[in-house]
Every structure is written in structure tokens, then in C-alpha cells.
Amino acid sequence: RRQRQMCIRDRDSSADDDRWECVDIKAVRPFTKPVSLDQIKAEESLAEMMLVRNSRLSVQPVTKTEWETVCEMGQTKP
Image (tube, rainbow, N blue to C red; front, side):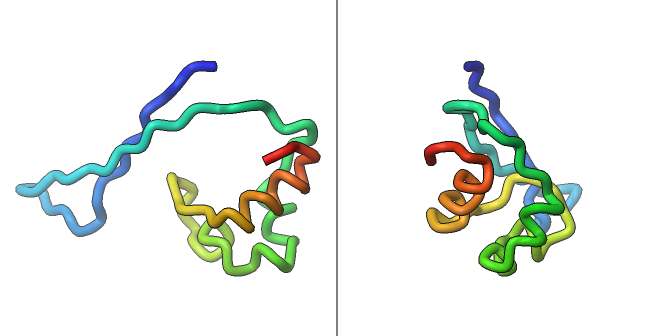
């Protein structure tokens, strides 16, 4: 599996201060069953997840509990 680097611009940066934050990500295994954004939004236990509350689809934090729930929905071991 290839490792990728995803970078996002800091919202507080200006044209003179071009700060970026980067994270390295790597897929460990595919989900057995795909999990759609609509399914995540429909899951009550994920109502406070940043992905559900924030309209921007970008790199966002996910709690251990949220990740376990999404993995369970995808029928995949965390």
C-alpha cells in the first residue's frame, strides 16, 4: 500500500504567512463493505463527529470510538 501525504492550508494564514499542516496517511486494509457519508450521517452515535458537523471534506480528527463505529459499519476490524 502506498503512503501519501495530505496537506491543508491553515485557515488563519494570510498571503504573507502561508502555513500548511501535513499528515502522512497509509491504508492498512480495505473495508469489507464501503461506508458512505450518508450512512455516517445517519448513524446517531456519530452525530458529533467532525465529518458530520463540518461541511468541508478534508483531513479531520476522528476519535477512537468514532473509528471503531465506522469500521464496524464497514464490517472491518479497526
